[in-house]
Image (cartoon, rainbow, N blue to C red; front, side, top):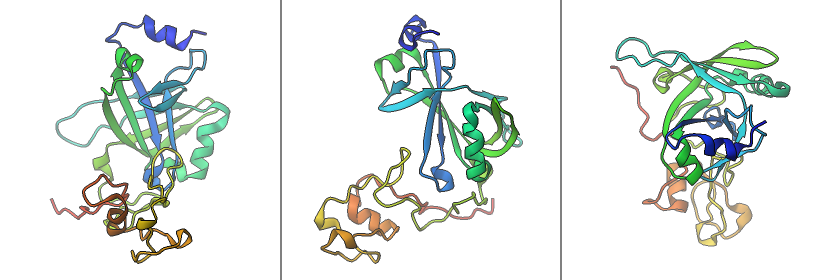
Length: 229
């Protein structure tokens, strides 16, 4: 098997590299799995922008651009080593609604850890075929999920689904909870005991901790509304 870094250095600087992210937070599960198509390497994990990508067979097919009509439905074929993906499907309702990101960059940016990339985002529409070696999924674009409820998580404008002070799996609520001046109860009233510090899962509670003008980890969608168009 080829050494990963040696293989990367053999590529031309402009050679395209695809990385893949399977994010289960969209279905209410605090797990993120990252892969790169490195099944022919020595198994070395790939580090890029602080994240670790494991070598795994991943392929996305039937990606087509269309200016009209229904969105194209690509297919994702994922390796199923030791039944790993099958187990995820059994545990989380076929992974329907899980977010799949194909992160496209070039070799020189991976080697230099430069944040230059383009993300193609899809959601799992349904599992198509589950084999010993691979599992195939039908994907859809985010627009295809308008007015749909995802298993384990309903798209609402209020009520953050994140577990308070937990980023297990790579995303979620990153608030450390170490500042006594920012301990609040479930009604956003200040408390003075860390054991009483709980999240209200509201936008107000998130702003009270992170600051109204700072980036928030709020997981709901305050601007969500229904369109009649």
